[in-house]
Amino acid sequence: MTNACLTFRDLTLGYNSHPAIHHLNGTVKKGSLTAVVGANGSGKSTLMKGIVGVLKPMEGAVTRMPGVRTAYLPQQSELDRSFPARVVDLVSLGLWPKRGLLGRYTKEDRDSVSKALMAVGLGGFEKRPIDTLSGGQLQRTLFARVLLQDADLILLDEPFNAVDAKTVGDLIQLIKRWHGEERTIMVVVHDLDLVRQNFPETLLLARQPVAWGETRDTLRPENLLRARRFHEAWEENAPWCEPDDHDHDHGDGHDHHGHAHDHRHDHDSGPRAV
Image: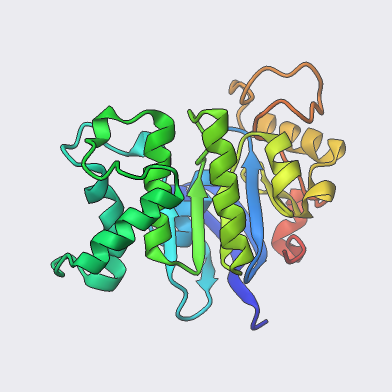
């Protein structure tokens, strides 16, 4: 499977010996664009951290194609907005893989930062302190950093949260540009309409994989309902991401998503390869 950018083999990830995601099997094809969806607490961010290596597997393994350069964008809530830094400082972190921590900051680097900021609609923002940016401006800044990393595998954890509609549209276009460049992209997304409109593949989690494959199949009502039931079985008192009017509301804007696999058998057969 030379075209597999990522391979999951019975992957189980968690914290303090408490599993957060169980028995994930399957492959992510090189050049694919995949949404990762599910309720709060379903293991989406945990999976991202496992792929990038922040979390070590409790069982099983995640294998990356040799030589793959990875860019990881965590949730905004994990960033310290009060840190005294300017936009140029944050974006320039994307040069670390090439320059190293102590590498000289050259005119070529300054030009690269300026071009990246122009590409995300923030031309001239280099000297702005990051604590003065709106949520949308900060996310654009972070996407500019990813642009500079020139990665083969791009992992984005809820990049559209607390971001205005115009910024969401612009960031989607950047993601599609990366997809057109045959980079492999996985994005944690809440809004199912956004997923249906823009993501060819979807992985639906409820601590275990519920469905994985073509988005239209994954987000079928029966899979969304199955994901809800699995999640409620795990956390009886935990609310769903947001109140629903219907069991399979397609546009509720939050995480419930499925692969037509009973998750109890995923450790045997696994979801079909993406």
